[in-house]
Length: 325
Image 1: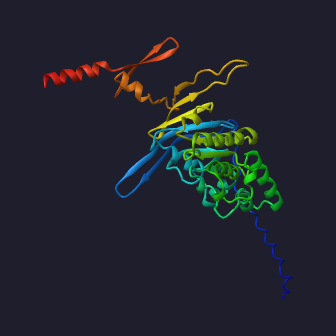
Image 2: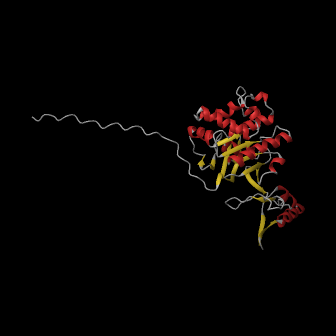
Image 3: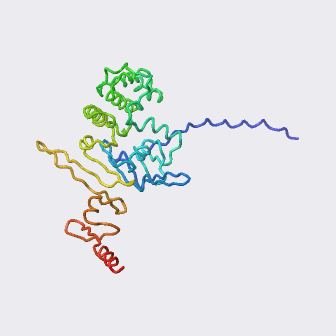
């Protein structure tokens, strides 16, 4: 009888490989790219379409204002871009990262590292029991940045935003403008790619609002951050190169302000209607009302432009039917 051989040596158990979030593919042109973005809110008896196929592109390093009437979808869009809400359909990419399919952990990491946010209410941006420097350092602490690095960067940001003198004060000891500039410093703490601001000057007087807007310009100009500001303040929207208007859950118009030429003056702002990738556009209400445009229009090819003509026959036919009735 043959004796059994030695027991086989078990194969070593492989070490677990750490799983990391996938690195987002870079978008060489746009820091923000939304395509056919839809957000629907449902209750037992009601369905609200806050965003209805919105398209938006914001280039890297751009400072852009977003305007629109109450209920137009501005805050919903900002919540999605901030990782606080999830789109129902469509695509939203920020710094190359698609937001629609993020897990809870990925969304948390995205909010900590990729995007910064400034709320309208100054008190909502800062923890009341922490000093200005401690508030700025907190996001870095959550990202496990060393204490020395946190202290140095907090001091640098507070100084850059003109609130270094507020370093050891709690929010209750700061003015509204100082609170908002400290909030901008806090939003920049982890060097985000994009800074979102929801009515950051909405509760401030015009002089203080200007200092806060200068803080946003500093973030854009000196820190290279793409800035998107939701605002009703005409004084703010008039100072950015590009203002995007939202109406009924879609981008409707863009106003561009050309930089002045060498030694010249800035050109007057020009408003453009936005054409989506399907060729659809929204005509401003003042156009449709002034020319009696509704239901359908006739398009004609003209030299260098497209003619848009109201259907006058339809109006005439309706009047004839009323007369015969």
